Amino acid sequence: MVGRITEDTIMRVSIRDSIKAILPEKFGIDKRKREYSALIRSGQMTKEEARHKLRHEPPMSADLAASDREYVIKKFELTEEEWQAIMDTPHRTFLDFPNYYSIIRRFRKPIEWLYRIVSPTTPLLISELNEQEIAMDVN
Image 1 (cartoon, rainbow, N blue to C red):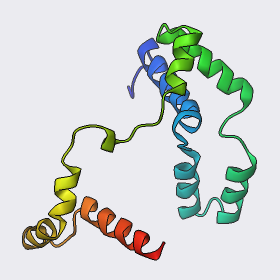
Image 2: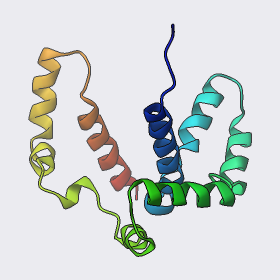
Image 3: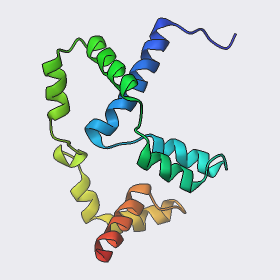
Image 4: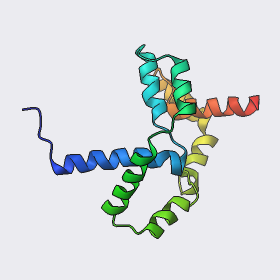
């Protein structure tokens, strides 16, 4: 037996799909980019087709987005006002909260040097910092 579909499973999938509908509106995140990228890599879609769909098709139909919105409001027992207040709050990043990012940036080179002693690869965080720095130099 592979598994049983339970009400809990359906709810988790529904909430995950509903969040997929909310991400573009609230955070500007379009998960279709990831999905289309996988299709391009597997040869099932061309880059031109993906660009066309991203530019000309909404992330989901208006009817589905509205029903998902209602579903999430109902599941989390929110009022319309509470929902709108959540959607209207400004976007925040990890930099808005206490963290060690400034220390990691400051000691990036020593961390990278020490990491090379231990591992043949560069840590992802250091690679991303280097890419950001290169991008800033270009602009």
